Image (cartoon, rainbow, N blue to C red; front, side):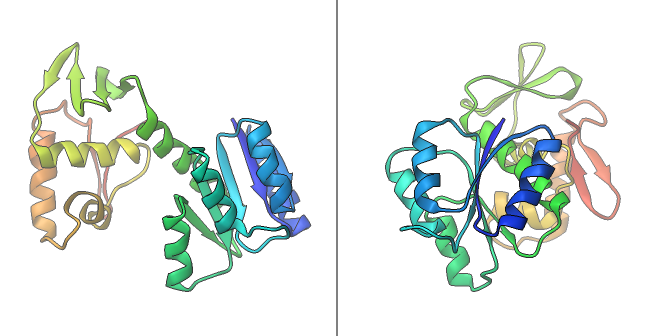
Length: 219
């Protein structure tokens, strides 16, 4: 997997590159947005890590906006010290999928990189996603199968399952279900009931309960 880093703080860029390289990624670093922009068209990257305030004709926001207009949909995470809600909103509007606020721990960087790639693979998958206990999920048709037999799910159950699949390996709490499934406030009891309804249609322990935190599906 190949990552592009746009970061003009040389010490931070070096630390990020060394850490991600040690984690098994191939990494290119650029301190100038013009050089990074050209590299994106010359090479193939799986993820972009973009500082917002950098040298070059374009800042991080402007550069991502420009490559999105060229139909390049590589997932991008912004690295920034900006905290204003308008700045954060702008990052999502121009096509970013996440933020890492400076200063940050390199372990957090790795987790966010893994999550961004996982979500991108889910959104662009043309094949069934293989899950524990022999289940397969067809992303395009939004259908769950076991031994080639469809498990019929209600609309809310399907949305809950998709959130768990996207976040597999991580715990999903009520706040994320509210944001991703309901998009409005509902009583947490309602969420637990819907998760319980989904679990009854699946093998025991396919959806695990993490006491006091939420639910998860193993990798």
